[in-house]
Length: 550
Image 1: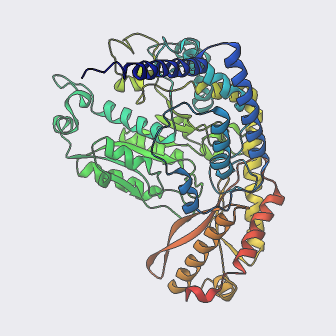
Image 2: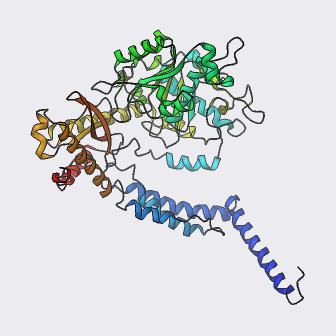
Image 3: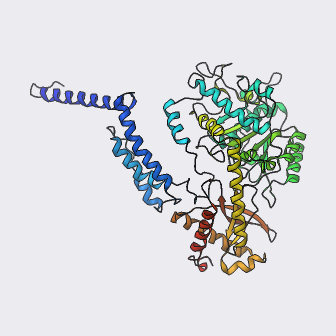
């Protein structure tokens, strides 16, 4: 199509306007990346605003806001990307009004329902430093010094778990052929990695067979003469093992969950019998899992007894200590982890009782060559013989979260972590003692550590509950009442307790019990805060008509 002479000036104007717009966008975008006085000015302004957001957010003692979810989701219904770069002041205002103002105050001393709490003050400036450095921990070429920093931090915790000799750590801490631990994004990936290593070592190369890694699970089981494969552990195993069973190709039906006792610990006799039955059925036991701190109630399995069973059966023994592992810092409570040093692998989650940000999970190996079974190489990255951390890990690119771990171990130290663990457990026992003296509540299990499960008993049923004469119908009514109580407390937003479901045997049948679940890990939480949370529940319960559930 040919333009007329009259149309040409308009076309030139549009072209010039487009060029000017392109130049303007180029300038705006380049300013976001350049190390210049203008970029510094923008960063300082953003720092000033976000620092105020942080201070306001952290100083808010309420656990939550009372906005309902339907109203909140309406604020996030735009599916179109802005055509032009948004003014940062406008965007930060939007962020403050819609995201920051309605986020959960996990650092609040009245938020005692989940395994997330306040962070030490050094995390915030270190987060800015880590982001500025933008190291990719997958490879030495993108995380030079940080790779060695990560190995050192992991070795510190490895030594706390296994306590090997000085010569052992001198040999393995920075040996590129050794893997004392793998840092991953969380406890779930750590557990999956442990099972992956166990499977590949159990079904490795032999004679003409190239191993499960290359030939697949079906061929591996056939070669070794197994009829199938299982993972065995407590019925309270974390759901990450369901994911592991799925990913390893054995299916969740082959995740054998063994009953627990009244203290939420795996039944050792039943576990031993399960191993015998698997052997009789010619099933490969990929691993036996011990739990050090169940997610719902904090129960601690008898790790020493499980280690004995695993050793007798020559089976990989993994301890999921995502929650309870840091008890090893405490002289007073580390006996609850007796036997953990005999585990082939151990999971610890940094964002729980190491008081670090989300995104730090770890799996430790007793044998520094165990992770060789999952090693992968590529010509452009993770070359054989390199220090590249990604060659023995499920994840590829990942941020330099080891910086926080290294800082925590140094700036808090052994005695600092010991204080945090001891205080959390002491305050949990205080809450348990309070519950036992208050007629409104029933303690459902003595705490092993700093998780506590209990329930509210409506006044009409308290006398029957004390006499242990509750019927199945009574328990169902109490369940509905506690579920309603927990939801109302969460909606009000002043304080927070989570809930879980426990299975108890009564009248010859298994009965689900709705339990209120407290997690006392936040160093800012005091006995007065615990009193406040319980009193909030009593006041809320008084306004719930029991007739609603009849």
